[in-house]
Length: 138
Length: 190
Image (cartoon, rainbow over the protein chains, first blue to last red):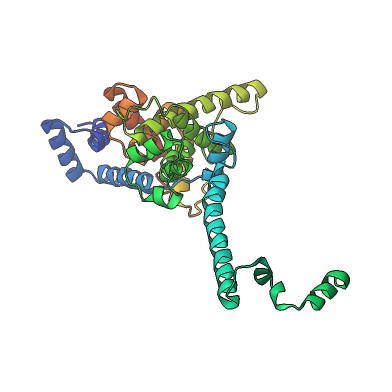
């Protein structure tokens, strides 16, 4: 069989099922010819290299896509940031409110009253001292 | 309540991600891009080489997908759908490139401007992906797209034919020719 026909069978064999007689011819050719075996190995090497080749975009690709989406008005600009802010603001506000309640309770328990004077610390001052503070201490 | 990015990344199915995107969940968009960016990169960088336009085409691929997400009925795999968009946008970019080359007559339209592997016997050892890139850029687009889908992405010849809307016989004959050209161009570099 001619070399060109052998080559054609070899290349076709990688991607399609050969007819039984073609398959047999190729097997015989591979047994008989060094050059055909070399070509087969070279093709296999190219295919393996192609299959494991890795191509990637430059770092930050996701961000660039998200910016593009914002420009195309598919998502709001800085939407992720706003969503994170909304999520975290609630948690921070809750923690702050809880701290204030604890402080108020602590002050109330220590002074056994919940008057504004006690909560601001003014209850412990005598009238004269309080007046002095109000008049002379800015 | 909207899911956070960490929660969304735990979602394993594409259909859940697509549903998240349809509902406007921004974390689903990001998780989707993270999941498919390498696949799109293989197609786009393979078609266009490592050029600034390739990054733009990659971004545009995702944007087009998101714009058309309500039309996506799930008949095709998400990856296949994205690959089809990536191939079409890359071919458009190559046409644009060819037009600008002929307009300014800078060269004869050869697309290997980014590749400097010398043909003069320079046998420097190179990263195998770079060699494949070089080999791909030496092919004309109609052969290049078939090599990328069949040999780089690993689609079957039938899937390749469906993506490119070509008869299987055409895919097989172009594939055979493309492999012979690859062997001639990079066989000694691998």
